[in-house]
Amino acid sequence: MLFSKKGDVDLIEMIMVVIVILIILVLVGVFYFKFQKADIEEKTESLTEQRSDVLLSYITEMPELKCSVKAKEEKCLDTIKIMSFNQMYPKADYDTTFGFKSIKVSVVLPETKPGSCNEMFKKDYSNYSLECSEFVIYSMVKPNYKSKSVISTPVSLYYPDLDKYFIGKLTVETYE
Amino acid sequence: MNKGQTEIMGLAIVVVLLVIIAGFFLIFSSKKDSGTEEIRETIQTANLMPAILKYSVCDKVTMEEEIRECITSKTSSCNKEDCKVFIKNSLKPVLDAFFGDKYMFTISKDEQDFLEFGNCTGDRILANPYNSGGSKGNRFELNIKLCRN
Image 1 (cartoon, rainbow over the protein chains, first blue to last red):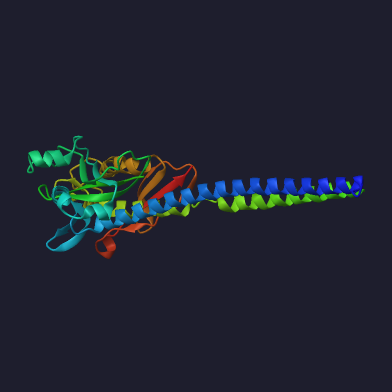
Image 2 (cartoon, one colour):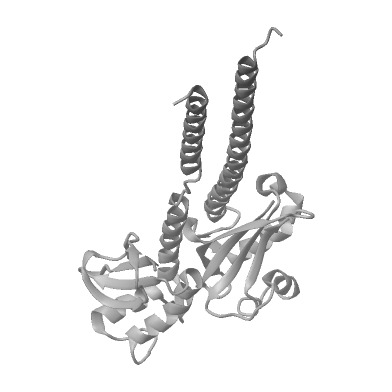
């Protein structure tokens, strides 16, 4: 017999060591890629939130919604403009700008009656101010969405019919 | 030590090294970014201050005018008995709506606190003070401090 028993044992030992190291490397690789995937998903979520933050700032500066008094721009949203925008937007190309989102403004102070201002405005545009609490600026819900992220910021709301300023909350819901 | 034992020792060292390397990867890849949340809170407080000052607290009177009148002459432009209580009761609901109970709201003039309310028991994150408009002698400061309990 050409092969010695000692040589056989050494060979088997070496093969076992290589197999064990390979198994360890595969396990380390699996765990590493699992955590990398979770990290990428977290970063994607963070980027989506940052885009929504930018969108919040953009919405408060949109001339279609921002109030202006005697051609001087003010830091507030005009409720009449919000209602007009909501009725107009299906004809304009805002779907590519906003995507699958819901953009709403709710009145925080003073307390007003709960209800949709869009509906009230359609029924009686001269008497909606204290009779409702929520304006929908834009809404396109993603079918079968898995989750949604919600961010908001305070805004000043101007009611031209009352010549008064209320405090509202601008909310952006992003569907994923 | 015989050869087999030496090889097993070598294998054990390799395993330990791999576990340490994997541990470092986990530590550095799982660090969370808390900066985004603080930026968002700063933007929220920055947007809330002008909205508060513009608020029509009663007929033809803004909150800015009411606060100024209360600071200078201790009276209410809205004909309320106690202007400080009126201002606090008007603003507390909106601050609670945005920040829950984790804030401390202060109105000050010439570095002296005029009105303060809120509930902070832990560390505070200072928000930038917001200066009202008006002439030099009429200006006051609003400040919202958000708390980490």
